[in-house]
Image (cartoon, rainbow over all chains, first blue to last red; front, top):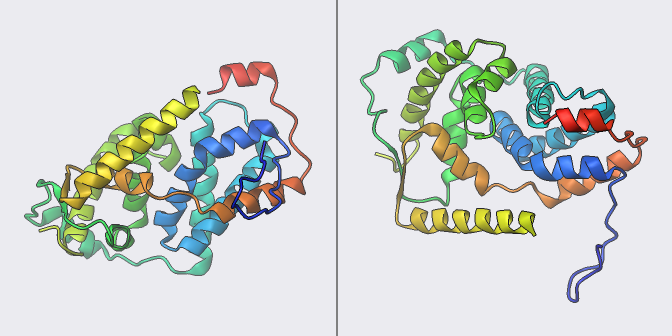
Length: 187
Length: 73
């Protein structure tokens, strides 16, 4: 299955002990890594978090009851893990309420599209914009970006009603657009 | 084969997006931009190996009963 190809370095690759879980990892790891990366804002921490989340899931796989989708179940583990990390590091970005008020009242150009001229540093700009948002907004935007999740599933993940999610999402989009536009060429 | 086709389509879509990005691109909403960013952010290869190695030290879970696999999504 994993025969070395000519020219490739020969490194003994560990085999999955559970083919079923291997498929789960293969299907969902990118989504979980991306959430961890943009939520925590640090690639090394995101790698560690992805490792820890899947290891937790692997240990609890038999307990997964299938009431939610696997994706939603993994997201729940990942969100709890990332939030615990943020709390333990005491590195939450403090956004005063006054900031939120500015976003909500400013006559922003936020209804206009987000223009991107250069993708080279796009990740950095996105991260800066997300870092400046309250944790709740950041999480909502990241979850909504995953097209596999419905509003109902997102609402269940964040412990709110779908209507509340829609309302907050509107404000989160606006806040993100303002922050993103201030990070670079999107004017 | 089906999986391969799906992957190829994804890759083509990503390449198309990258070409568009070279000439400037607009995203109507924040989540579209994040989706684009997510699609071009792969899991670093070292992570997969670490997960496999750690999982190898844990007793593998029993396969889920057929009815859980059938009804669960």
